[in-house]
Image (cartoon, rainbow, N blue to C red; front, side):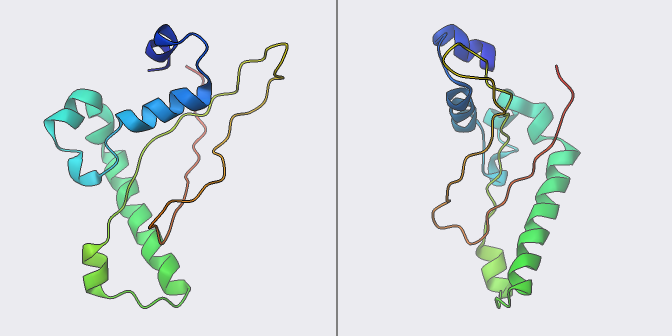
Length: 126
């Protein structure tokens, strides 16, 4: 994905590559079985790992609300939704103007969200 973005814009920043990557993805779990999702990234959207993480994330959000003392009704749970996506934050490239630093997920809010969270996973290079 990054290589294609760099062909379009050789000066694109890692943050902008990630923004394009986000916009390209299917973030609604209800769309993971569509033909569009299967064409884009079948190995991700059809994976047992993603579906397992979805269940864990949803259960964790409900548990968090209950621990806060929030009364979550079965109807509210039925109508609620979870939005998920992947992001990649490699180190920024060092230039004479910008020293090398680790990329990170910047602070921000999600409108209309009751619970938000991030799972960081360290992977092997390549």
